Amino acid sequence: MSQTPEQDSTQGAERSDRGRPDPSHSLRVRAAWIYYVEGRTQNEVAKTLGINRIAVTRLLSEARKRGEVVIRIKSDLASLVEVQRKLEAKYGLGQAIVAPLGDADSDPTRIIAAAAGAHISDLMQNNMTVGVGWGRTLHAALPFIEGRGLENVRVISLLGGISQARRFNPAEFAWQFAELYQAEGFLVPAPALVDSARTKHALLERCGLDQILEMAEASDVAILSAGGISNITTSYRLGHLTEAERQSLQDAGAVGDVLYNFIDADGRLVDHAVNDRAVSIGLERLARIPRKVLISGGREKVAVLRAALAALGPTTLITDEQTALALLETP
Image 1: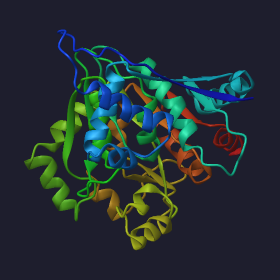
Image 2: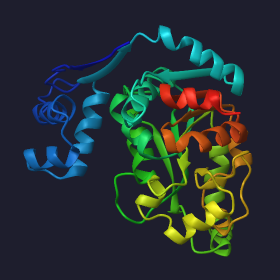
Image 3: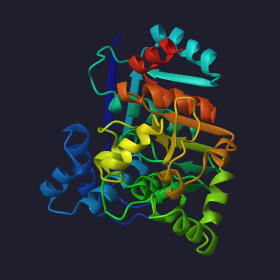
Image 4: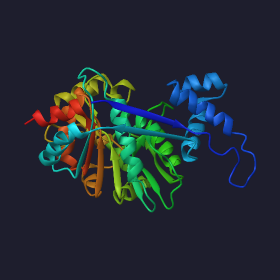
C-alpha cells in the first residue's frame, strides 16, 4: 500500500481583498515553495530570503490562510480498516485513524502529523473553543492543517510555556494554530513546570491562571499528544526535565505524561513532586472535555498511549500502523 502526498502550491491573488497590490505575495510564495516543495527548514528559508525565522513563520501561516498553499494527503487505507476497527472496539474509541507505516524502525512523526492535519482541518468550524497541547508531533502537523478564516473560534493552551524561545514551546504551537483560523488565542503566562507546589498554587489562585484553565475545561474539543519517559522524549531533550527527575519519575512508576501529568501504566497519576509543580489542566478536568483527539505514536510511546487511553477516554486516536499493532498486542 502506498501513500502519495500532494503539495498544491497555487499562486493566489496578487492583490488584496480591496484591490490594492499585495507586496508580500511574491515573498510568501517563495517562502512556501522553499519550505514545502524543497523540504527546507524554516531557518534555511530565513537565510535564503534574508529575513528572520519569525517572519518566515508568519509568511507560511498567511499563505495557508489565503489558500495560496494547500497540502493534501491521499492514501488508500482499506487494508488498515480492520486495525482501526479493532482499536475502536478494544479502547472504546469513536474513531481510530491509522497512518500506514511498513517499516517498524522508521520515525512515524511525519506520517502521523499528516493524518492529524487532515483530521483537524475537517474538524474545525465556526463557534468552537479548542484546547491544545504541545509536542513534536503536533508541531509537525501544522503544515498539514488547512487554515481558513472562521468566526468565533477560541484556541486555549492547556499548559504553561517554557522560558526559552524554542521550536517546541507550547505557546508557539497554540499561537500558530490560532493564526491558521484567525482565532482568539489564550495562553497560560507561566512556565509549564514551576519550582514548587506553593508557587503553582499562588499562580493559579492569585494571578488568575485558574480562570484560563476553567475556560479550557469548557472546550468543545481538546487536541493532545502524549510524551514518553525515555531519554529521547521531548520534555527531556529540551531540558524541561532533568535526568534526575526523569529517573525518579520512572522509579515512581511513570510511563510518560499528558500535559505534564505523569501517569503509570494504568493511567493513574504517580505520586511525584513534578506532578505537583505542573501548571497545566489536570486529568479530571481534561476528562470533562467532550471530544478529545489523542495524536501520538512510536515505539517509545506504546506504554504511555495505552495509559492515556485509559486515563482520558479520548474520542479519537491518530497514530501509525506499527504503534496500532503494538497497542492491539498489549494486554
